[in-house]
Image 1: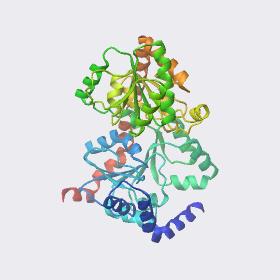
Image 2 (image 1 turned 120 degrees about the horizontal axis):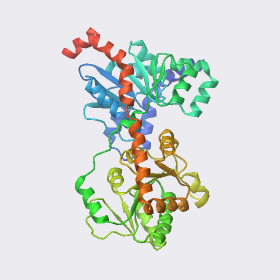
Image 3 (image 1 turned 180 degrees about the horizontal axis):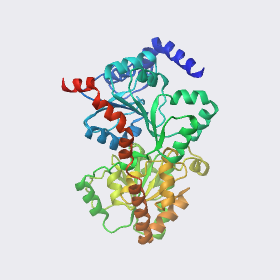
Image 4 (image 1 turned 90 degrees about the horizontal axis):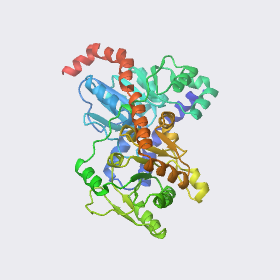
Length: 443
């Protein structure tokens, strides 16, 4: 009943969709109008690029960050002889950074007309839906074309599972047609089976297969030389409330460890001026710069803007991953603060001792794993943050043990993309045996 109502309403929405997308474009600023029109066209199911000749796997994700987690799988699909099309739904965000051989389009609205148009243009041979991408019209149209569909990196939040458990018919209808549900964790596998998935298997999280981003060796050497033998830690802050906590933590650390260098990497470059102003009011020596800046003397607090995380992970053995203090700060400082956390996998792979706040729901599985392994520590405010930083900077053996535990744990969890390829092998092999695909590849 609910699904039938959804399909009827989405079909009725089709005539109004161009106006809706035009309105969304008008609300956003910062992109060239021509690019906005292209995105709107893609959301209506029209391709803005030509389909490559040969076998094509379509990977449907929600956002660029989700697509980034699947890059190891994309690499393996390409090595197996497939072209890869990746779609995302967040048209307000930049496209994901994909390998050069992969194509990107913004996904069509889940309207029967636009779904059919998209599939007619791209003609995928296999469709992989990421996470919990249940789009009834897209999956229905894909099945009608005889395209095998699998759910990869499948993950159900507690809220989504509770809702679907109360509507079992809807859950079975959404899962119908997925020939395989490849779950991120054992809990996800059990939830999918409970909801009626025909075949569910645990394969792990392909994000653990991601290699750390290569660092600019010249800039990294310059930064390391400027730091010298000073004790150093880095903090990735999401907002002014977290930056305030880091500044207060620095004061406490500096009182016990004179000469300590605190590097702050704000999420938004424009926040650097606010952090500098606040540091000045607290009587702290701070300066904003870039990694490549050539000043010899570094202040007590260095605020780096426009920097990738990799060089800081390689330079500072202790890192605080923000966007995680959230409500804890709101209560203590009376300021609005966000939550959800930052991805800890690259920091862990590079052997960092990781500190984080309590609100890491976006990467809960990764943090729980690192917590159990002893590669991560929980902090709640400036006082607990300072205490953990002091402990690790004073005790080199503890710092090394924590960093080693993090690196070993993420290494142990690697291999999900290989297991996904093994689980998908029957569908992928079937594509190679289809004469129509062979003829298309040779034409």
